[in-house]
Image 1: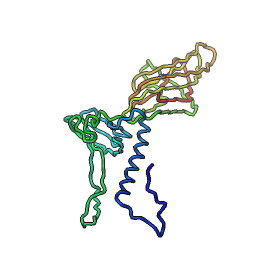
Image 2: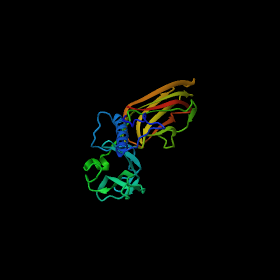
Image 3: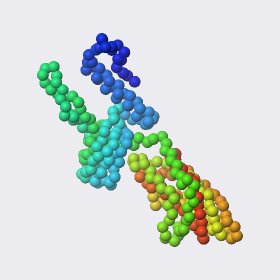
Image 4: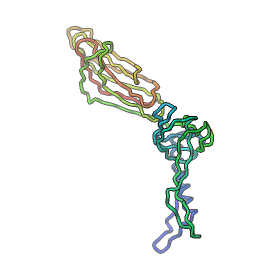
Length: 275
């Protein structure tokens, strides 16, 4: 990282910083932040594209737009994005805004100038490709590229608690929801692998069935049945969904039902990992 050398400064010897020093430090910070972000993007980095660092999620269905606050990276710079809601006659485009923060600085000729500036990206209604951030279709909000992290790993545990199941998939009754997890609301559809484990205690010709859902879509079902009418059955199940594409802000649910009679299910863990 570039820096301003201060080792020559003492209580008896100091320098007067020039405009070149401030420009150098600004460029050094921009370069350092740029390298950090590009390392997260990887070898797919394209300096002409707009990368979403966080936020900037449209909660509505165009038209209109209801876009959350966030930040983007474009052309080596990081820009704050304010939340915005509007109905578009064209499309949502990103424009570069450069305004004064209101403070003025006195110059040697006696004039005052606004030199402390706020640069932001403003998303607004406009014609496709008209956004001033890139000057082409990469400024269209629809073409923003979410900064996808390398991996996500989540593990949810019940602490080994026993859950008594008293409903049925086919009865129309409310199911027992054992776990729920909501995928990140960042605009990225990811591929996940999902593992859930359970140990079952079944009494008198009974069993337990577990169902994994993404929203209302059933991803997988696992079943354990005790065919013996005389003994309590102790068993276990492991279900793995190796590669499933799940949209952002989707609730992943694990539910369980009894098959017959009384069934207790003990659920040690649910593991959700991005592929």
